[in-house]
Amino acid sequence: MTLPRQRGLTEQAADAAIDTACRLLRLPSIRNEFNEIADRAIKDQMTYRGFLAELLMTECDDRARRRSERRIKAAGFPREKSLRAFDFDANPNIDAGTVHTLASCEWIKKSQPLCLIGDSGTGKSHMLIALGTEAAMKGYRVRYTLATKLVNELVEAADEKQLNKTIARYGRVDLLCIDELGYMELDRRGEPNCSSRC
Image 1 (cartoon, helix red, strand yellow):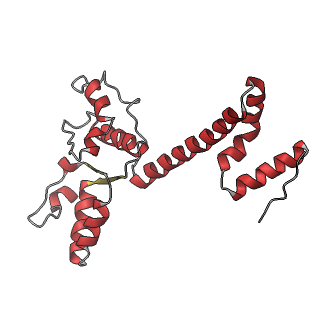
Image 2 (cartoon, helix red, strand yellow):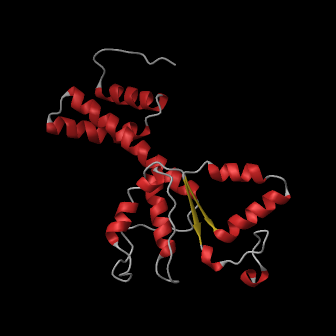
Image 3 (cartoon, helix red, strand yellow):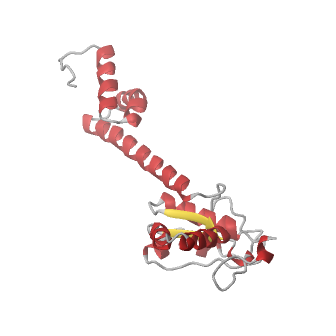
């Protein structure tokens, strides 16, 4: 489809052309924010380049936000947790500086493991989900699972001769968050024993 191009469009015709072009080019953020940004550009006396940059950055920022939301959803976290909401005062043994260094995700880039160890109720699950969320927001592929669920999935995959496929699927993520590892006892095959299921 080609849009008719005319010089001297009325404001209403220009708005309709912009709306149609944004739909065709799949630019939903520009389409939604155009009028507000255009009004601000007039008020702030932006140059054409400045106005165009503002429009494009709006689209880029919104796409980055939506990608982060998709990665967080794909991670399968059971609930939302953030580092901002973590109560460091209630957990004085946890160093806030170390946690914020971990939030940079350099350890993921270097393929270094991280194990959160502590008594029950000290915020390990909160911290795991929060760090996983930070990683997803920074562009890493993250997957959250409970240790028992992972072991059961691997045992079932082995029984069905699908173990390599299952391991490969988990191998495609940058960060695998395994929660509640300490609550589980395994037999020699790796299956949770009855006492941990009962």
